[in-house]
Length: 172
Picture 1 (cartoon, rainbow, N blue to C red):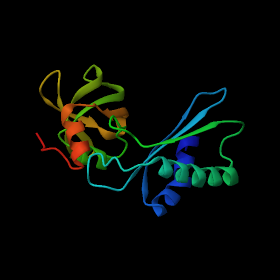
Picture 2 (cartoon, rainbow, N blue to C red):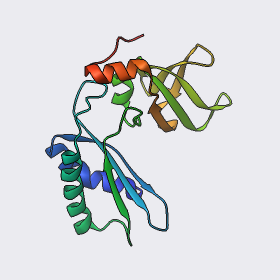
Picture 3 (cartoon, one colour):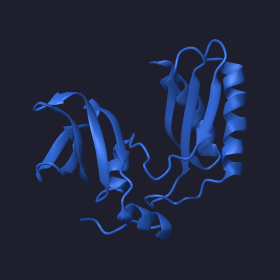
């Protein structure tokens, strides 16, 4: 388990007790690393826009207290706490169902049929595969969830409209 995973395990229960869901923990850089923590409210809407500056301050204080006690990072680092935003990372299988019908970019850790990068509309999950209607080929791709290195939503008019309305757009 790497440092980011250890930190996620440490802080997730506290965030859940505060009414939030941990989206991602990422440790960036080596000299003076940045510890990036993204969180959201539990919601069925694609983007509820409900994270406030006060929420970020609360989460920052709670996470700082845990990190001060546990001390998982040696040396100085900068803590960055935020909501995931519209072009949010997709980190859990549930995200691929939740954002079904929206545009996304996915990158695999190793090539599948000669490709590592895919862009298209999310079509959900089937077993251990993420389904994506490929923008390039028009075909439905079955991308192994375990092989996804990076994935995020693409900001489109329908995502913005769904965010503003606080509800999901129709599934294509």
